[in-house]
Length: 158
Image (cartoon, rainbow, N blue to C red):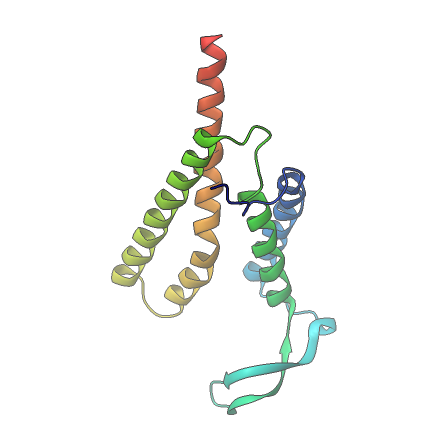
């Protein structure tokens, strides 16, 4: 049974082209706490619990949406880069893909467990935010490294 859950190969390049500037912009926004006025707007909210402020379920709230825009762009670009077909997609590549995903999940949760034990306060909150993206980052790095090693060993055999 052949499952077709991967994006076409061309999406990998598109994902990487979008991913690199999105990561840089995201780090700049987080590092310098940028919140340009143009991104302040009323947005629908399922739950709001502001410190020393209002608390409600289902309503509208005023928010700077730059972080959300960057987060959405990062998720889509990571997904396109991670889950696009290779030029030669076969059973061995599929096996490497699954192994890399399992390995990335283990590493991601090892980082999370370590953080839960040794990092506290707002620093832990930042770990949680970055942890949303690290599983895909680790997967992309490991998968491409394994494919590179496979291609290198195949070229040595020829």
